[in-house]
Length: 77
Image 1: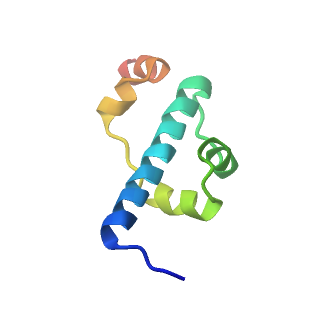
Image 2: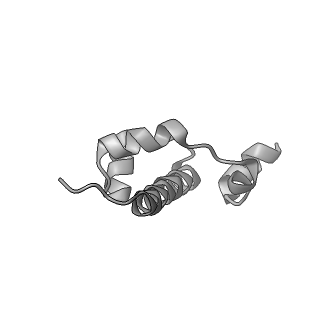
Image 3: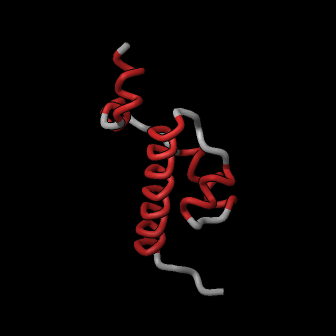
């Protein structure tokens, strides 16, 4: 098995992280509930192992949450 160069790994990791973050924000906007691992897998096409690894490091700042209409209402209240 070939090992990817560090720069390629970082780009891939960031791309996957962005997919997961987007899936989370879209799901929260639509349902106001956290998605399950299976929902992340369906929305991103990533494996459940990849999703779990990224969720360990996922943190959203308040500004990103304020961009979501339904969440803005809840955060401001």
